[in-house]
Structures are given as structure tokens and as C-alpha cells.
Image (cartoon, rainbow, N blue to C red; front, top):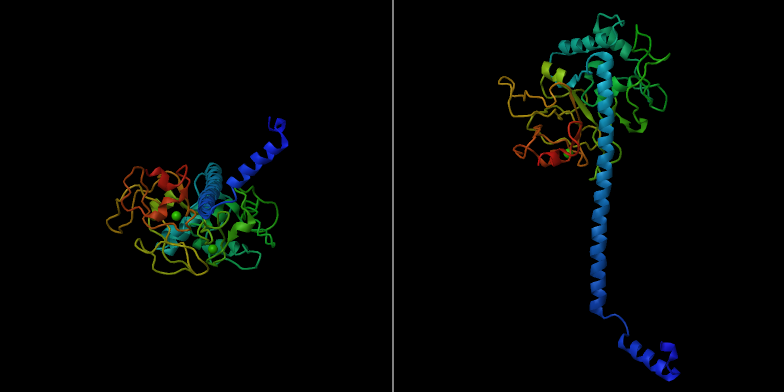
Length: 332
Ligand SMILES: [Ca+2]
Ligand SMILES: [Ca+2]
């Protein structure tokens, strides 16, 4: 319609419209900047939250895979693999006997009567850097996962786990045909932070606070029933580890996660040892990731209800095989 007006009339309309707006005022500019700032902040929060959720989903997925592998392990071998570190206060001979009992159950044709022979056979376990483990009865709550599900490395720079020898009379030797492995470990995430020669397996990525992720840990209920002691010192680790120690936060060589303990369902303790006796998941096992805060926490009390007495903020984001998400979510 404007085009039907005479030329001068159109010029007037255009000039009037233009003179009404010569630019943004300072206040308008500031408002725009503030709005952009708020939007950017919201976007950043959304992105961070999305990244966090994606990382947690990845860990949960892997925990489910580890759980399936442990279940297959029991179907094939009659029992879940033992956690020896639970009993690090236990007499060393008892611990070695428990280890031997499990080996005989799993490899009935592996005829060895003494632990020393087993230990010497296990010395074949060498990593790509050529280092050997300290001792097979020192497998801790993190290392047990890698050893029992993954077996021995192939001794190349790949750090790839190849299961156990298919020779039933010496499953601990290297080379030859191998038994099927139950879980495919990502070689790039095998680590040995405590430098004892046994690998641990860490979740993918770094924590949300920038630390290296602590490894997955595993506790089986049968071991706990036999030796319900929280882990204490093991070679290369700091000593005093007790129920009241600081939360374990992995930040490099020399620190440790030996203090991480299985969850109990209530505060009932053994009167002699003051150790919680009611293992959560009493017939199976617990797999625990410290979550993205990289801290396991100290209270070890699993709450089905909203009563969080004794629950620390560090437990809130822990991921386990006995919950669908963070522990904190399910405690509400
Ligand atoms: Ca290790
Ligand atoms: Ca945590």
C-alpha cells in the first residue's frame, strides 16, 4: 500500500520513523547484556548438568555390565570371586587358604597343595612395563574385579587382558589357548595407582571436580561373612584406616582407597569388633563407584528410607549396582 503514495509522502513517513530511533540507550544496552549473561549462565548450567548426567549414565551402564559378568562368573564357577582385602586384618594364612579354596573350586584340575606354588605361578602376571605383582593374596577390593573377570594380561604394550589359560592343570600360566573372559576391560582405563603390580579399573573420564576417577570396588558377601573387617593397610598404602578416617579421595600415587567399605543396612555392629554386620546385598555382592565427586565417603550406611543419619554428602552421588541411580536419589 505504501508504494501507492506519492514519492514525497513516502519520504516523510520514512524520515519520521527513522528519527524516532537513533540507537539503543545505555540502559537498554545494559539490559541486553544482563539478559545475555543470564541466558549464558543458564546454558552453562544445563550443559554441565547434561555432561554430568551423561557421565553418570555411562558409569551406571558399565556397573550393569560388571554385575552381569559377576553373575555369569557364579553360574560358571559356583560362587562369586572372593574379596581378600576385606580381611587384611585377618591372619595371612587364613586369607591365603580362602584364596586357595576358591581357586580349587574354580579350577578343580589345578592340583597344587601349597600357596607358594600358586604365588610363583601367578608371578607370570606381568604388565607391559614388566612389573610383577607383590603377592596374589594382596588383591584388594578394586583389583579383584580385574583379576577374576579379566585374568592375565597378554604381556604386550597393549595391556590387554586375556583371561586364564585353558590348560586346566595350570590356569595361571601365560600363552596358549585362553579361557573366555567375562568382561571386556578397556585397556586405557586399567591403572595401578598404588603400584603393587595389580591393576584397578577406573570409570571413563575425570570427575566433575577434576580429579582422576577412583576405581570401581567390589565386595562379595561371602567374604564379608567370613571376615567382616574393613580394609586396612596393604602394601604401598597409607596405614591407619579406620571407620572415622577422612573420606578417601584419589589424587595421585601414594593416596589410596583402602578405606572404602561395603554398605551395611543398619548400624548393628559386632560387639567385639564394632564392625557393621548387616551387609547390604547379603546373598550377592556390592560394586561401588565413588561418583563424580571422586570421594567414596565414610559412613558406609545404606538407607532405604529418608533417614539419613550418618549419611555424608560424599555418598550422595555414589553409583552402585544395587540402585538405579545415585544413592542420594534413592534415599529420599
Ligand atoms: Ca594395584
Ligand atoms: Ca561420592
